[in-house]
Length: 280
Image (cartoon, rainbow, N blue to C red; front, side, top):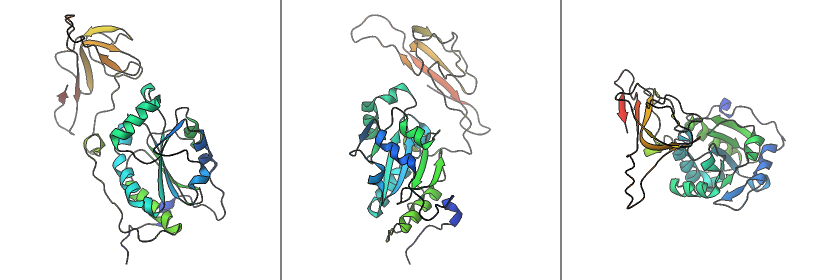
C-alpha cells in the first residue's frame, strides 16, 4: 500500500459543489506587472493543475520561514501536476523594483513561476490582506483551501495531496512532512519567542532609545544609552533615518572626513524567564 498522510474530510474546508465555476480571482494573473521564471500565465493555463498561489514579499520574515516547505512541495509534486505560483506583492518601496525581486528570488532559490504584483491587482482580486498567504486551487480552478501566516504546513500538504489524487495523480509516495529551514528560514520557536518585529524607518519604528529622537531624512550623529531596556534599540554614530529604512553614513575611501563609526544596538528577550541578551 502506498504510504500517505492521513486526511480528514474537514481538512478541505469549504467543498466545491459539483460543476462550480473557476474562481474569478485567478483571472487577475493577467494583470501581473511582470513574470519571473516563467512566461506569463493565465487562469486557463492553470486548468488541469493543482495550484498553490503564495502571496509573498522578500523582506517578510514570516514568509521566509515558509519557503522551505514551498520549495519542497514544488520539487516533490510538480511531476504529479502541482504548480506553485508565487505572487510578489510589495510591502516596502525597495520591493517595488522588479530587479530587486529577481535578485532576491535568485538568492533565495525561488525557481517556480513568480507573478510580480507591484500594482496590487492580484492581491485585490483575491481580497488578500496578509503576507504570507497560501491559496490552494483545484484542477478545475476553484479555491478549495487557504491559510494565512506561518504554520499548519502538514495540513496544507495533506490538502495538496488530496486534490492531486482527485485530479488523477498516483504514485506520489510519502509526504515531505516536517522540513527544516536554516538561517533566516529556520522555524520560529513560538514557545520561547517574546520580542516583536522591529522597524528602523521612522514610519513604523517603535521603542527607539537613542539620546536624540530620530531626525527624519537628514544625517545625524546618534548616541546609544549605556543600558537598553528589553525590546528597545538604539543607533550610535552617523546615520540617516528615512521613512522605511535607516542607513549608516560611511566615509568614502581615502576620505579624512572623520565620520563616526555607525552601529545599531538592540536588546531582545530570547528566552522565557531568561535574561535579556544584547546584539549589535
